[in-house]
Every structure is written in C-alpha cells, then in structure tokens.
Image 1 (cartoon, rainbow over the protein chains, first blue to last red):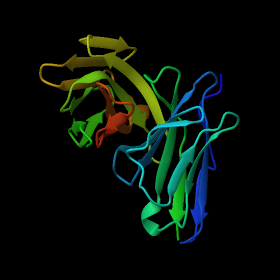
Image 2: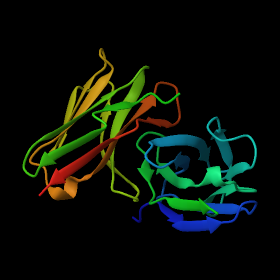
Image 3: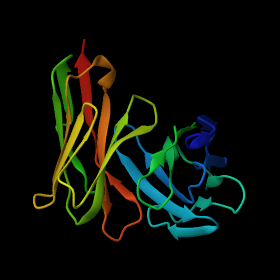
Image 4: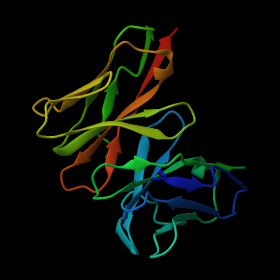
Length: 112
Length: 111
C-alpha cells in the first residue's frame, strides 16, 4: 500500500503565476487534509475534504486559494497569482476515518 | 487558534541518553499524536494516544497523556544519532476535523 503521494516535490513560480499542488491519498482513504508549514514553524491547517466535498476550509485564505478532491483523481490545491508570502511547504494528509492522519512528503513552493 | 506548545524548543543530548519532550494544549481533545520531521522532509507518524488512555509504548517510544493537566510527554529511550529531527505534537480537538500542531522540539543526538 503506497503512502500518500504529492507532486511536484519542489515548485518554483514567479509572482503572479499559478501553482497547482497534487495529492494522492492512500488507497482506501477518503479524507484529505492540506496543511501549510512556514520555515521553523509547525503545520497549520488549511482545508479538509472528502470525495467531491469541502468539509472545512476555515484555515484557507479566502482569496486566491482553492481546493478540490474530485471523484476520480488526486486532490488539488490551487494558488492563483502567487506572492512571495505563499512560499512554504504544503503537506497533504489522508485518513480512512477522519482520525489518524498520514502525511505525504510535501511540496515545497518557492515564489521568486 | 493553534494550541500545541512543545517544551523545550530545542534539546541536545549524547547518543544513548533518553530524551523527553513535553506538549501542552488548551482545549478538550479526542486524541493527541506525535510526529517526527527530518530537516526539509515530510512528517512521520510516531504514535497516537486517545483521550481515555494514559500511556502508550511503541518500541523505544513512550507517550503519556494527562488530560487533567492538558499535557503529554514523549520519551525516546536509548537515543541514536538517527533520532535527530524535529518532533511535533498534534491534537485532534473534540468536534474538530483537523489537527492542531505545536511549534516543535528540535532534538539533536550527538554521536
């Protein structure tokens, strides 16, 4: 059973471009969470999704950020018109029952 | 708001010694989880302890939970250089969907 997969592992974007981060949960897991980690800090929750539904997006900025988890395919975190402050590591986690969460290796976004 | 706070922020010990890290939180929880993160890498799940449990063991790891004091501790016995990493506690608050992470303890084990 492969673990949570994220791609790309590293992403460099210029200010104003779009960033698309992908997360494939573990097989059988229908709960997906996105977290952001700034340097030297802990992870901060962004959004929680189940298949085709956003359950909780209280940690996600209202503008420029969106997330989806379609019936088929990976979960996508999309950041439009990136700014330097968006530079961070973005982690996805999946869970079978919404309890214990398994994390992917993360995508490190650098905005130049 | 984020509620996990680890103590100490950083810890440096000799190989073979034990390492103890503490975590405090503020609200009622369903469970508390400990994770390890090597520099620049993803998180590795170490252990989960539920609110009705007081102690759990996994290999060289021992976790305690005191819900009356809203605190947890992680003990790593007979430390190894490979244990060098940041350790985070994360709580699943009652009624919440997501984990709240602390700021982490940076452990350095000197060979």
